[in-house]
Amino acid sequence: MAPSAASSPARPEPNRPHPGFGTGAELWLFRHGEVHADWHGRAYGGLDVPLSERGLADTAERARTFGTLGFARIVSSSLVRARLLGESLARESGAPLEVTRELVEIERGEWAGKSIPKLYETEPERVERYFADPWHFVIPGAENDSDVFARAWPVVERTVLAARGGRVAVTSHYNVIRVLVAYLLGIAPAHSFRLRVDLSSAVALRDESGGWRLLRANVRSPGRGA
Image (cartoon, rainbow, N blue to C red; front, side, top):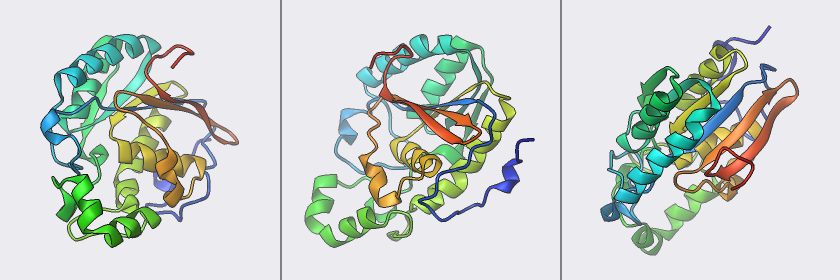
């Protein structure tokens, strides 16, 4: 019998792969599309910034192509750039949609809205400490990876268990996806930034009895191609 959502610790120690529930469910994690040019190169994090025209077009295309996969359930970040994809996938697939703030992008606190190149220039020590230990290090008003995991994983866990072996879609953000994939596969937080998840791309994993299997990474089509 599969364990309940309450069986997983809220903030486990990282680096150990999740043992899996053995449901056979597929988990598809989608990153939102390109944001408006005004926000390029800025640490917008949990700010609710709009998509660009390209982002809107890519969102419609991802929904059209991936909507054929037959998702049992869809859960989405409440931020508009990801929510639009969740809503579009739900329309295309006919799957029920849940929208929640638990899947929003990492809160950047004092860094929110600031130029990323400028942060590297003016705060190199804090930037280095963040990338060296993203699970624990935090700046004032911000979240770290542990915080993101504690809110996002329970939503994904109960959604996977409720799908009863079907496909689940999550529409969210780079750092949420990075934290979840690293947890499931046992990737150390400091190494998780090597995971590439481009805008309007997806990562797919399968819940197996021996753990989670990475099926596809950084893809823009449900076929076997890229």
